[in-house]
Every structure is written in C-alpha cells, then in structure tokens.
Image (cartoon, rainbow over all chains, first blue to last red; front, side):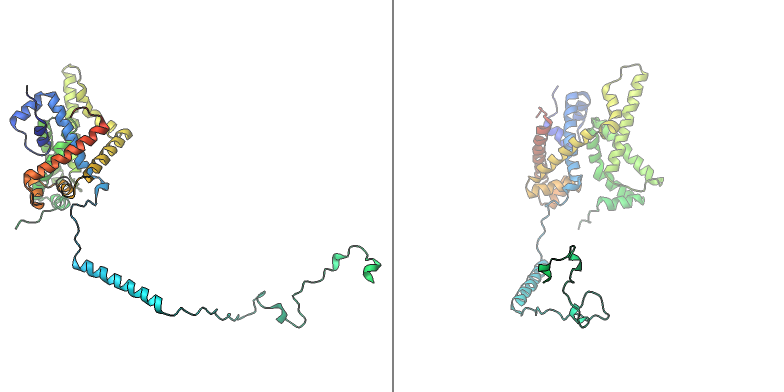
Length: 141
Length: 197
C-alpha cells in the first residue's frame, strides 16, 4: 500500500480538499492518520500562536511617515530649541530672601527675648542649688 | 471595485441579528480552522467534516432560538465541535460495550481529554512552551513572510486573498507558508523529541 506523501498531508491541513483516494487511504491506514494528526497539531499551534495575546504588534505592515507626522515632529523640535535658547540668554531670577512675615498676634517663642521687656535676659539663670555644702572661707572671702 | 472585507466581529454581530449572508461568510471563513482543531485531536477527516457541519447547524439553531448572546469565532465553534466529538466518542464506547466487545482505548480517550488532560497544569505549561517556540520561530522569518503568515493565520484570509494583498502568486504564498511550517516543525521536534521527519 502506498502511503500519502508529506505534501499531500500538508495540503489537506492547509485547506486543500482531499480527493477520494486520499480519504479512502486515511480511513484505512492508521499510520497516515497519525501523520495527518501530527500535521494538524502543527497547524493548530500556528493558529493558536497568532491568537495568543503576546503575538500582537506584528510588523507585517510598516507604517510610513506622512507629511503631518513630519510637520508635527519638526514643530516639536523647533519649540524645544527655542526653549533652550531662551533659557541660555535670559537673566537668572533674583534670589533675595523674602521679607519676614509679620505676625498678626504674638505667637510665643518667635520673638527675641531681649525685646520682651526691660531687663529681660537670655542668659541661663544661676543655679542656686549648686551649693550643697557650706562654702569654705576661701571661697567666701 | 471589490467591497471591503468585514472583520469577524462585524460579521458575528450581523449573524447574531440573523443575517444569513453573515453566517455564510463566517462558515466559509472558519470551517477549515475548526476541522483542523478536530484533526489535531485525532478525529478522522470524514468524521471531522461531519462534526463541523453539525456544529454550524447547532450554532445557527441556537441563534434562531434566541439563546446565543455572544458569538466569538472560531473559539465557540471549536469548543462546540470538540464537545460533539466527545459525545460521539462516548456514544461509540457505549455501543461497543453494549455489543460485548472490549472497549478500545481510543474510544474513551475523547471522553477523558477535555476535563482531565486539557486543564492539567503540566499540559498547559507544555502547550504554552510550544506556542512560545512557534512565535519565536515565526518572528525570525522575514517581514514579508510574517505578513503573509499573519494574513492567513490571524486574519483568516484565503491563500488567494493573501496573494492579492501582497502582490504575489498563490503558489508563492503557499511556498512561504510551507517554509514557515518546516521551520516551526523542526523547532517543535527539538522540544518534543519526535523522531519522525
């Protein structure tokens, strides 16, 4: 018995109508039926591969740059170049510190203590408790 | 001038409204894909073609009965055809058992496959690896070959339509597809260890 050729099996799975001889043979020959199944699995994988989400974005239709695209790109480039030139030529802005804000009320701890009242001092108070023992005469006189 | 070719989703929307010409075009466009899906599951050629006819009839009946709200093709047709193939395998197995004959393993394979094998994580991982390998091989082809491949396998164009779109002869389109198939076959043979050329 003459088996079906590889080309015949491939043609069947690629969409060619199988003739009566091929059909009869496939019904009788388990070997050729198995080979047809294998070819069909390959064809199935090719279809599935293209249906998968990661197969999108193929490059079979190259996108040609049209004049509106080129004009938009040129305009963008021009604007960027003008911005660079302007930044290079204009004087830098004044860096003076802003005037201190006036407080409407009298928030604590924000004013110089010297201005609080006559005689007010920022010096630490004398520690009167430092003498735990009676001072000697040498210290007193 | 040739009218523009409707996309499958446009045709599906028209088919859901009951337009018979849309159904005709969908059947013409996807029948071979569904037959291949059955052949890949080990169903014989004649039986696969019969099951696909039955599949379309059932889908049209469902639409006419108002029970079809979505029509995603070819996926729905493939699922329906596989289910019919399983039913046919179960019926065959029952008949064999009733006749007192020993049950052929092939007969019960169709009964077992959908639930047990197809959802098996190992099977799914192998399938994913296969598809990834196929995709890589196709990406290594030239731009025109990839274009022809996408026209036929993604947009379901016939070889003649693809030839017109790319200004090639039908023979050249088939040659390109055969070259891609040979490349993918060799790559899959590497990972599956299939000795037969």
